[in-house]
Image 1: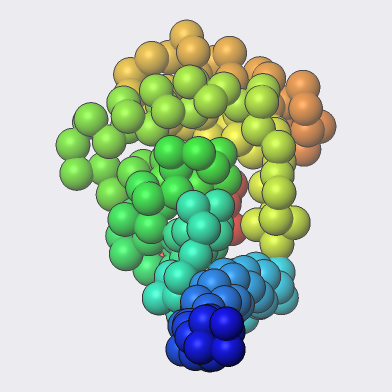
Image 2 (image 1 turned 180 degrees about the vertical axis):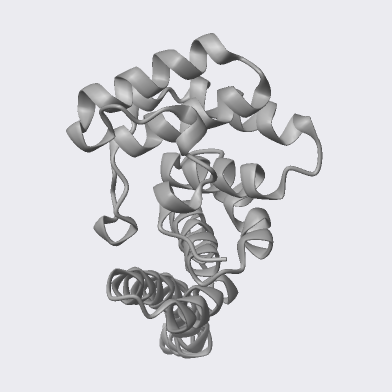
Length: 203
């Protein structure tokens, strides 16, 4: 009986370190998610006060950490906006692309960037279709530092449709924008030269 007890004790002592290590690894993963989320939160805070370069660094660090899908989307969205608001609009496109699958702020950013790039007419068409499929009526700003609004998104949709050659839909959306924001009353699509006025970007 003593030999059996001794054997059981030895097994417990041998396996205990492995159990501890297993628990530590699990905690490490959770901690890493927390680190990534904290970096993302800090990045958005920096965007809200105009520190776009600092925000870029924070979002880049977050993307290098272990993260959930939601954190990955937010980090890519934030990176896209940090870059675009700092004048790096073409560089922002891959990040907006990565987040636009489930984030409407990223959709807006991507569409603005496509309008800016306009390699072909297809860029305008794609921007118009993406905004139309959202649709702008369902847009709700999450991050106040972006200074977006439903009216601005409607105006961006109007611009995209106008550039894509659909004047009727462009007129519909610019009228909706004016109905949402009195500052846009009397504004024609022809006066919205590019996405900068709407998205607060700089060239």
